[in-house]
Image (cartoon, rainbow over all chains, first blue to last red; front, side, top):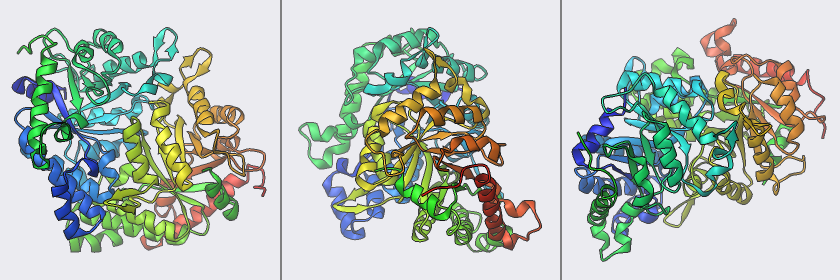
Length: 309
Length: 309
């Protein structure tokens, strides 16, 4: 019922970064794909198996240096239900390894339907009396356009199962300002959404001072990161946009509080595809990912106060 | 590259309504579930098989009287990848029967990720050179909070494969106004989003005058339906909130234009669970659904101008 689980893992690894597992087939080394396509043909089943094998290799190298992974559901959905099977198996494996799992789905709907999404990703599904965890996530990204009754079902599940959510506030993409930067009276839409996060989280503040309701704020907008960090003291930030999207350590430093906490910074392609940028063979893809993850930890922690606690 | 495919089916069936297939296990008659749970145990696999059998029964009775179905992804996701397999098989069957399929996913993300969602639901996934349709949808509901570059990848796929989208504008839930009714200068957020739909659709206007970019506007807000119908002449409406959520025919009539077109009204529980409300046995669930679908067609068409063309 707070962000404590995630923050404890950040403190333990001294690493406020998360690896985005958004594995397009293009990112998977050929030596993995060739064997699988030979056996299963050019099918969605083969694609799912290739993604899973790729992810397991990454998790094996990363699980003791990063606190969390963030699989982006779109890249699994693209391969149909076989892709979503790979997502479920990836999460299962990551949880066995002790990683915190943020499912990046940006789900949103009216209350009764949001119940179903909350159950799917964070709760337990009732199947004829049997309670089954469909996707086993610890955290889900969501979109707050529908207001409180699209969020309430998530708060209930967060409270019951000690889970958390991140609500889109100021996204990292170039056109995010078209709606998010518009002024409502004298507040930007992203501020209005940020204030809603503080309200939604007010009953779930944990030992580090942060609630179970976090916010997505992009590394590509450092001024807004700074502004929102000051205005939203109980809202933990998930910060995309570092690396491939153009954000650097000096951009994300404003997301952190005086204890070196307050945010977790994501990198996806930078880590998954690290082997393509350096002096690595394909078979060293997970080693390259580990080196990049270590470099990223160093890069981020060099610009923030030491993590206290 | 327009809404023509859907509108043609509405004209052919003289029916501007769509059946929401949001099948919780609670809705599935016991005689279907008992056999399946006996064979597969209380598993997600059994749940998926039960949902699919339920859906096929409904589609068999409905395919020649309604133009479209709208499966809500959350209710499949709740049963994990086995649920999503049921979704894929449901869509496959519905398409064989000639139905237009609106995947209700309210997906949203930054451009590169939206590419993946567009591919998953409306396009073709490349698997080692093989082009495969992962979910075979004709249309996808989306959330525009991220602005133009979260929508552009969808427009590209709509154009290439003759598909369409519905963007959330004014949703049917009680708290939709918390953000959507706020004023930006002197325009409500829902108007700003509606205007964006007109802009996004301006290059894809079809023979009935509507573009490939539609809008979701709830039956529970008839005044906004009327206002938006006047302001957004090229934007087709998907109208949820009829029936179980409280909207009636007199509320939705404002969504239609002078030709009796301009909108499609959804009912989910009202049709799926019709057998629970009347003098039906469980085995008559699809017959009850058909009678309710016919009643709904009569109800909606009684308050609008006759469908011309």
